[in-house]
Length: 421
Image (cartoon, rainbow, N blue to C red; front, side):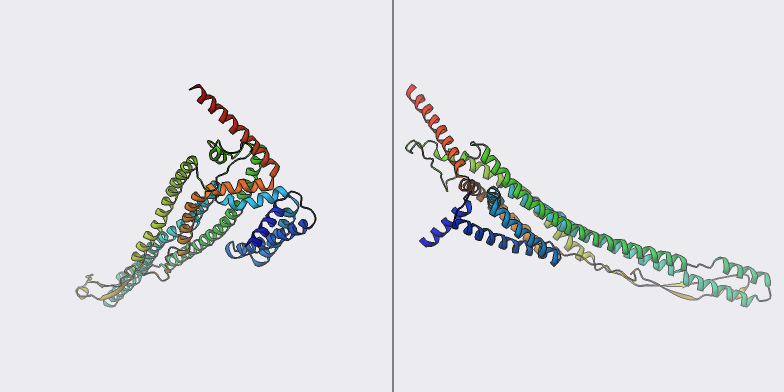
């Protein structure tokens, strides 16, 4: 155990040194190579499995990243510090913001479109039903034409000798004939175009979803690096930056040596407790809103599941024609015509979209991670400061000297006030 501890101390000392020498250079190269290969493998898996890049592009990007990361981390000491700080930065306020933003993006790209698809399924049922009604009404011209034709033929058969009546009846048959073939063809073309547009919109939404996931991933990594670099810049340029917890831990301890600053590792100050409580409330409000939308997705899906089995019915209509014309022979003319009233469309593939369990679990994990980050934020900020202190030891000495001087001044002022009383 002691040997492992000594090894870890040696590795960290070599990794954080601004200018290693001798055998330390080879050790640093080994550390940076291991780090570059490991993170490159993770990047390849992320690109190919999560972001759906093709295999060749994923391999090329991962190889380019590994080589660049090796050179940058080995040659540039400040960039090595920035890359090391990205992990604790994830657990700070900035990382929590990114996590909430990712949750909102997942909600917008997965849950809300799923609600839209299920609501659209109901609209599609209504459209298909309207299509079926329209087709049925168009087909209703057939029994009407047949009934009219039988009536005209019967009248012509009875009054064959009266040519004027025969001519008028033939003209009636010609002018009242309903031809809906062109209307039916146009209607079918319109329905087909609607199907093509619907399919195109669905594919477009899927492409936009994938593109948004890729953009979100790039923004997430870029913001982590930028925030780490911003922290390092503030640490190096201001001795007053991020010293609150050290000052609070050391203040009031008059027995400590003047050249020493006591740092509480586990103790949380009252200011940090207040900040954590406010962050906890904010995270709760965000994720309650997200939970309500996820619940709405499940409710809409179950409602649509009840509606989707639309009760189509087949109705037969008996048309009885009781016609009386010029002569007595037609008084008793009647005949039954069957017309099937079927509102069910010929093609109506209505599918609902069940809420994705993986998306719900992912949002739940993000929620738990956000809560965990609230409690770990205090220690993540301290870890980030300690990383900077290890990489830039001279700057840390200056910062500690400044804090020592500040604490001495406070102790003198307190003693003067005590002496007055």
